[in-house]
Image (cartoon, rainbow, N blue to C red; front, side):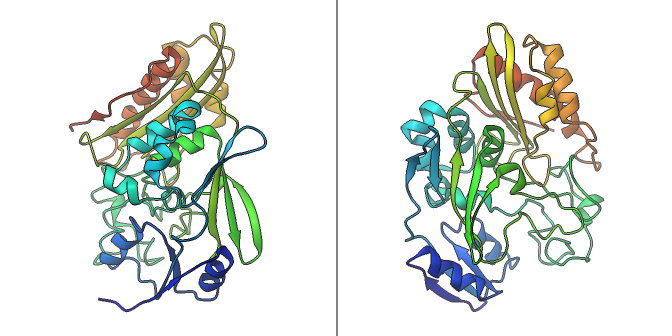
Length: 338
């Protein structure tokens, strides 16, 4: 058992100061990811700063008609909030596709964004991993890589981001509110998570001591034509091999706006605005959806065991867009047997 100190913060400022002043300190709330990593000896914080009593548990209306979600709102509370169910059903569906009911009760909105990427080798402290020890290598590239990235990977890392909620937030165009030693800032969701590049140990763009305080949703859109499709190895409590958050707005018979984000395929939720733009002004058809899927997956590369994910992702995009256009959102996750 490694030794660490524990502090319970009473204000956001105190929490930030406690972490910013100690390179070995980490924030902890629900702990559903961090505690696992500590048990696996992957994370070894010297100090934990408990933020669970901070006033970050409200869901508030914004001036432009959106919602500001406190970082400590539990995933279960968020998914079942009447405003989320009514105005942002894509987000509610994505949250309910993730983890188990018990974990959703403990996991927080801010913590969901900060999950470390998934990789068997990252979670095994006995093998090399560039995410744990930069420069040590990436055995996943030639090893067991069925769950790994097909987009945005690098020679240093092919891990994938595990969140379902984040895929929906990417599609909805959310923003992330952050406070740190240098003050507050707002980060566009597409800029919050990073691709691995040469520094795969950095999963996001936060500086040490910065804390997520809220996630903001823009004014409601896509309430009718949407779907969250998650393809995984079993029907519950499994990470996505591929997931798709798809949302469409129709003007008569043609698409006036489209959003598509992929999960399970990259180091971050994957969204390509150019693929969405291909659908504007077109009839919602399989041909148009296939064209968008091809653009979304341009440059996809498999690593052996995960080669199948390229075609799986392409078909999933077409299916998700078809469901969204028809106004028949996915109500049951699907099992993949390979």
